[in-house]
Length: 170
Image 1 (spheres, rainbow, N blue to C red):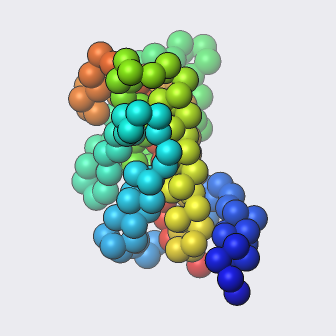
Image 2 (tube, rainbow, N blue to C red; image 1 turned 135 degrees about the vertical axis):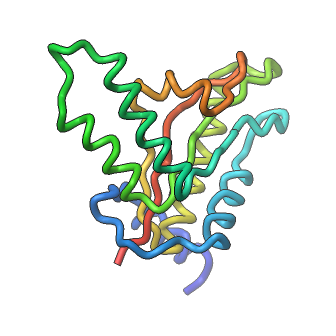
């Protein structure tokens, strides 16, 4: 199979796979590094490299799950609070092998939409690298990520665009 055929196959197979379908096997650090490296190859105007990623695994990931649940609880009015949604937040994070925060850094050198587009292309590269490595993944952008500023050390010129969940699939 030539490169164009391989690329076409990977693009055609790319899809969101949710944590409920992830196996318990771990993703190797080499594969995680490969996925994140692919993100850094995305085009970006004036080479601003506007993506900022933080990897959550193990205890740090478990702490993220608790924090996200607490944020949901604190910002949701009691009359619309759903116990199922609260539990799902923790389940998804804990079921994923790795969770990566997706943050855009606005440089001020180019329009903000261009930096968001560059980060989106970086995430698409992550999707393709996951597909090529038989890793399930999906990008979630719940409103509550706006409240993760402290745990992610988000600066004034940055915004969290969501979380990227990854897990092995059988």
